Amino acid sequence: MQEFGRRGNHPGLDQQGITKARAVYWNLTAPELYEEAICRREAVISQHGALIVDTGEHTGRSAKDKAIVREPSSEERIWWGDVNRPFPQDRFNALRERMIQYMGQRDLFVQDLFAGADPRYQISVRVITELAWHSLFARTLFINRRTDDFSPEFTVINLPGFRAEPERDGTRSSTFILLDFSQRLVLIGGTSYAGETKKSIFTVLNYLLPLRGVLSMHCSANVGARGDVSVFFGLSGTGKTTLSADPQRRLVGDDEHGWSDRGIFNFEGGCYAKVIRLNPEAEPDIYRTTRMFGTILENVAYDRDTRALDLDDASKTENTRAAYPLTSLPNIVPEGMAGHPNNIIMLTADAFGVLPPVARLTPEQAMYHFISGYTAKIAGTEKGVTEPQATFSTCFGAPFMVLEPGVYAEMLGERIARHGSACWLVNTGWIGGPYGEGERIKIAYTRAMIRAIQSGALAKIETRPDPIFGLHVPVACPDVPAELLSPRHAWRDPQAYDRKARELARRFSENFERYLSGVPSAVRAAAPMAD
Image (cartoon, rainbow, N blue to C red; front, side, top):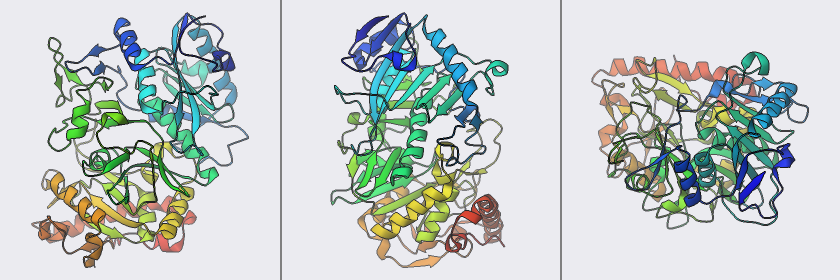
């Protein structure tokens, strides 16, 4: 095999049985990967220097095509079910051999990287792919640190051009994302959506770190001038990335963190933000990255002549994305580590219009809402969605949680109790009625609530219990109209509000039934009053 780039004394690909390839490009830099991506017609360069790529038919994760190899070392710990589907190891090995044969006729790009900013819990990750821009994505999203003693603890082989044969390979479709903990290997094929690589390693960390006493979290985090730390949980569309990118605070990371006995730490070296209809005034720092060299823009529309971007165009997908290094942002924590959270903020975009814009949570309520992981899908964002739909994602990241949900929730509750973290529910969705009738809560008001939480001002304000959800709702908040804080009073028809609120409360209770046996009675008692 011809080899180019910077392998140094790192182990070769023969560790994975890869002995043939047309050429191997080791640890190329961003400019070199730009050149390769352009020469291979994988991408185009935007008017301002970002790399624009099209991920083909897959514009998001293929959750139903993900599976975990059932093998003796891990099978008793894994939360098997719809999320973590079992896959036979012999089928996995046979598929790997076919992928190795496929690689023998192609150029490969290799990046030797790390996941986890805390050196005590950091793992080394090797990413092997056939696309230059995928190699740049990995280099951008993981931690890029040169070292002479690199030895991969986990390897990701991502070959979008290799498609499985379901009858032969045992996969659900021609697309697959398969993880084997015993061989410390991830196989990805049949999809060009680069997020599969990022989330596969997040899944790995969600298995490994809790076994070492570290809570792994799908969250963003930032730090204030006083050193106070805020953690933001939230599903896609709730504002997790936007609200944590605060020019008055330093960003630790936008998506994945661990909480150890020393504090929190970022898993990544980059950000992966949704950019559809990105507002340069409301989100100036993220918007600026879409005009930078080194940013990868996935499925973003652009003018074919001028290469000017159109971030409002969702004709390809609502899930347009920008992948950029953390260093593209002006105000970050470069070491990726901070202290224990002062405030834990759980974000939801309630399209039913019944949850308060902000509420204080007891530790038991925090565990209940953490396990529930509620938000809502709205019409137009997903095929077949014509009215608001309640969505529950365990621990605000069900597709990536490998262990029983109670494991993560118990660790969260223990840390809240030990470090005295204040917990809050913030609704970035609708007020005055459901989607289509009410109004989306202005981001300026949400930012004001977040500021009041982080300054400590909101903790000093009197609260009143919500009669249905039991949440402790502040009677006032600086820079927020008082009438906005009581969702029932914001509805024209209070009885209609009561019906809709109890409908959502029933959905909470129905979703939580599967967890009842695995949580303390105090957490079960934190459920909304459905009747």
